[in-house]
Image 1 (cartoon, rainbow, N blue to C red):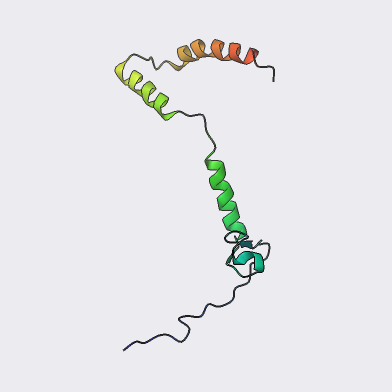
Image 2 (image 1 turned 30 degrees about the vertical axis):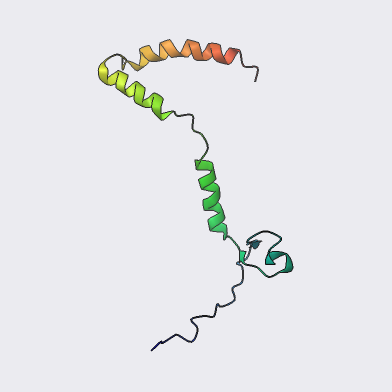
Length: 103
């Protein structure tokens, strides 16, 4: 015996929210070209989340392998943790490298 809900196979029509831009799913050679195809629209909130995720993928310049190597050197005592002395050694190199940059 099989019991089914009367609406089990029907899909209610949906309308895009205001400001949403419906986009066709699939290529133009499919049913989308003739107006028969699945359509997807993203809400403003979802577009914001998508943009935030894309920005989060931007390279931060932090190299995890270099950080791990530096931490290992500090732990072994090979790298001093005196920040003032470290800055005095690094700053001249940074200033010299930026002097060569015309921008």
